[in-house]
Amino acid sequence: MRLIIFGPPGSGKGTYSSILKEKLGIEKISTGDIFRAEVKKQSELGKKVESYLKQGLLVPDEIVIEVVKKIIDEKKDNFILDGFPRTVNQAEWLINYIKIDAIIKINVHDEILIEKISGRRVCSNPNCDGNYNITDIDKVIDGIHYKLPSLLPKNDMICDKCGSKLIQRDDDRPEIVRERLKVYYQQTKPVEEYLRKKGLYFVEIWANREPKFIAEEIISKLSNR
Ligand code: ADP
Ligand code: ZN
Image (cartoon, rainbow, N blue to C red; front, top):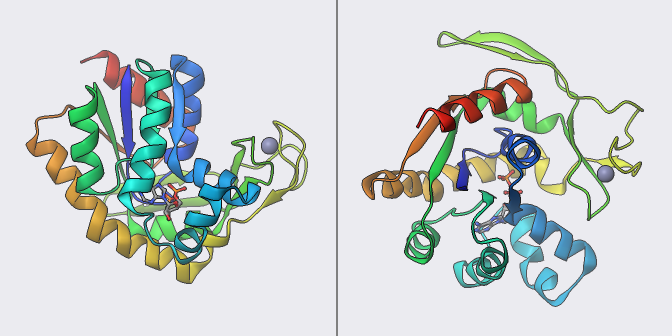
């Protein structure tokens, strides 16, 4: 199955796609994770993209597409794209390059995003996708009941998967988060409109409960297709 997971920064895309990766046995392709790992390694690619990531700005399309193309060529039939496409250009390239089966669209209110992002902690090991959250949310907004307990590691600030230290991402600081949300609404929302116009199949989910429930809901909606 070839999937895209789509939604604002902090909507839990990374967590859901890690669960879907395990449950569906598909590869997770996260452009953000790839870029962050390259920056840590200070590879040639890492040096090229570092300043964009630091400022919460998008990496130029040519660079992103080259990276994604290489991985899609290897993984071909079973993947979930997390963080790509993020511009109409990227979306146009993708749907002309390969057939996408479904787009999982995550809905969540901004207020929740900001709270959740500030509580996010990630594994400091560049080869690990460990993802946690220290914020606990239980409130209703516009009739949507958000019940989002924290996602704590078993040992304080240590990754369950690999034992490395947990850290806050540089771009999870509030001023950068606001910039990322602005970028999302300006450049990424049009991607959704574009893909809907092109007739792609959308599965919509409100991210108001624990990731494992959301992942189950996604799988059940995908299989009802
Ligand atoms: P978010 O939590 O904001 O969705 P990601 O981890 O997906 O963050 O991405 C982090 C950063 O990596 C982005 O702010 C951007 O600089 C860069 N990036 C990731 N994916 C793309 C993409 N498809 N196009 C351009 N830049 C990207
Ligand atoms: Zn880890």
